[in-house]
Image 1 (cartoon, rainbow, N blue to C red):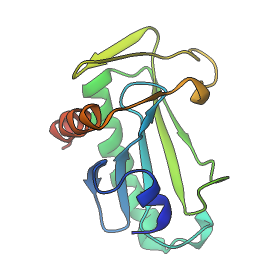
Image 2 (image 1 turned 30 degrees about the vertical axis):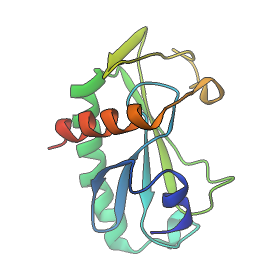
Image 3 (image 1 turned 120 degrees about the horizontal axis):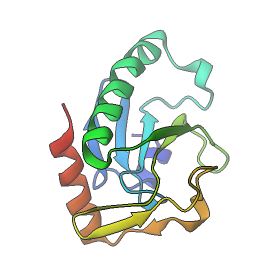
Image 4 (image 1 turned 60 degrees about the vertical axis):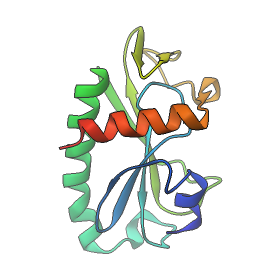
Length: 142
């Protein structure tokens, strides 16, 4: 795994594993169910990923959206490719909703709704919360 994947807590945050991608619970949650979709590659540019990674992305995003719809009933979903601090190809996946959502003892409000997500107002999860939320999201995966 590349350094970016490890920085986001792998393997403790692993929700789903694919040939070219991993889906991780985002340790800092701006909204409930926020994820990191990270390429396994050492690539630091989206266009440098192999064609197979781009093809697999269709399956991965379908799984993400299906699981998050079941888990948090999002109204919109944001895929943010920021890569300013962590250089390897990855997206921050932020489910968006009006109001609050709760699961496994964690309740979060989408502070930015209906505008940009408020990443600076994210809630940092404790280790026990991470374990519970990873297990919960895995149970939503198809």
